[in-house]
Length: 266
Image (cartoon, rainbow, N blue to C red):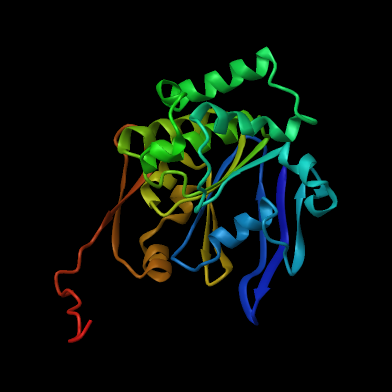
């Protein structure tokens, strides 16, 4: 067992965002967090990468409470890609990727040859090596997202925490990223909105609703028409993927819904 959320609760301004969440992520597993907007996915992830301190409960890494570790030490084993990751500084792509080595470096020591090779390999894997000398401020949203993922990989973490990593990515790069995560042997906790992508890549899926865990199991066990209707409020038909056997959701469009008409003066 590598990562464990033990009865994690988060209360902010009198509102409970997470309520006694218990979740365990085994070594080498890809575990997906899914749920409607405001269900607590990002809040749970923030507790794991220590941007937020739980009101109660604890996040354990190999049995050690992460709160007891120095930030540098936890950054050596857990890398995060947040939903609102951005940079306003005029770094080149190569410089920003290299910042992933910061938790492992003391002082202003330059990267050694092995670390430079690691950065080049991460950029090649994310298909951004041709952008190495470009300013990150000149990149598209998808290109910048791939740069930030490469930076996380350069940390050489044991645990990856990704919040909507496929945001801004085209179909090809979505598939390449998720295929890499599935085969990487890293421990991955990832929040995804696309239930079909979650079914394709995740060993297990944990479903959150109103801050509580309502289901946890394999994609086939969790993604049922009944659960999707109850949690997401939509009707689906489930079919098996013809190549992988993973469940795929076919959503029913509601032709009775009409566009919202702006009121006068708006």
